[in-house]
Image 1 (cartoon, rainbow, N blue to C red):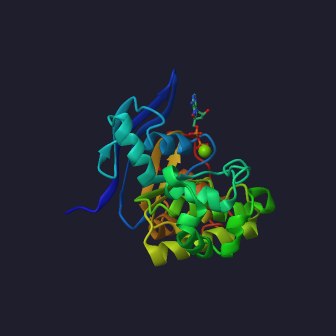
Image 2: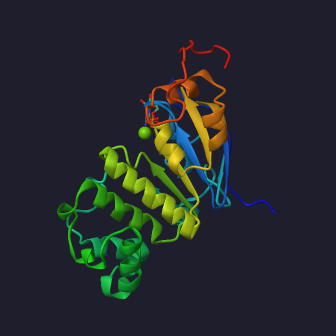
Length: 266
Ligand SMILES: Nc1ncnc2c1ncn2[C@@H]1O[C@H](COP(=O)(O)OP(=O)(O)O)[C@@H](O)[C@H]1O
Ligand SMILES: [Mg+2]
């Protein structure tokens, strides 16, 4: 039996005349992390949103966690959106300012009975797992830094034990040192709890830290995909080489890359 949780095949998404995703295919097995990397505007967020049913494909298949997302009915989608958790990019707008951290987490666990007392132990466990003391459950978002808020957003996403986590640029708004701490946290949780994740970033070095496989998007198309080690050791496409060369944190930094025009051979 296959342990595939994501199977996207030949996905096209168009907004009017804009052809934003072009024949995108990717697969992901349970317990693994796929990194999706590409510059701003390459279609990463559109891919993520299509996978949770927020955009309709103009062609292709999106199978995730046993459902055909584009064909799913409203009830099926509602249940599905609990199993597939998106962690948002902006740690300042994503947490409700009028709720304590505990209330936010309680609501994630059980929207119908969102009382902190009812879920106190689970909330404390998750706060500790993301590196925060349990008593922060009584505090409000404005009392926390961007990095701490992202830890809280991660706890909120994971506390429901989702079958898939989609993290879209979750470290992009953070300072480099805080970014590194969040990546370390995710890598640790992934090891101890076996997360299945799609990790999206414009930064290849960031993606490398947590991913098993990498998909490189350019202009809405997949130009390269493979195991993370292979992509770094032997990038095939000029755009991947350019991403490596542009990033001083990556092992490929010293490569002498010439940017080739679009459509040129890899
Ligand atoms: N709802 C929308 N309507 C029209 N165009 C959109 C919409 N969402 C995204 N786009 C366009 O699709 C392209 C890809 O955007 P996006 O998926 O946000 O890229 P990324 O996340 O890689 O930066 C961009 O050119 C963007 O302007
Ligand atoms: Mg985006």
